[in-house]
Amino acid sequence: MKKFLFLFIGVSLISCSTDPEDLKDTIIEESYIIENSESILIELGNSPVEGNVTISQQANFYKVSKIDRNDSGLIYVYTPEEGFTGMDFVEITRSDFEAAEVFTKTITKVSIEVK
Image (cartoon, rainbow, N blue to C red; front, side, top):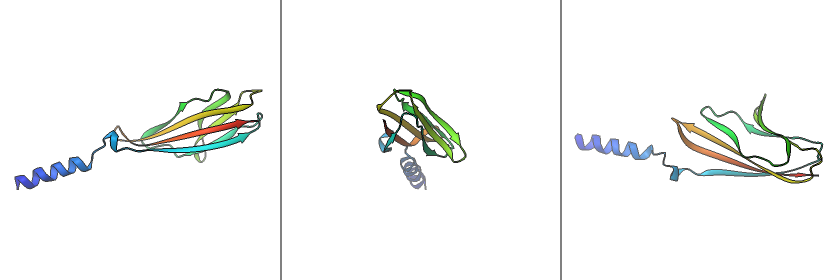
């Protein structure tokens, strides 16, 4: 009986591993073309129950670049700075936690061409 109990505990600990080496990042790449007078709204889904959504690499040429909320959930809002034309980039990272451990991470890389 003792051997069975130790074997069961050992298997349970191995199967519940949250080793960072086991985690895989999901990378999403999106591209947009807008006029300088326009803004874009990118839907990011619902707020994580445990976790966060952050701008991990901020755009460079913006009047507004932020994560906000609307009726459908979280959104990213971008408005280029006045007079800017060219390429801008932003990276948004969504981390979902369970018991203070990250178990999924989604990185959204956004390329924005402003005309």
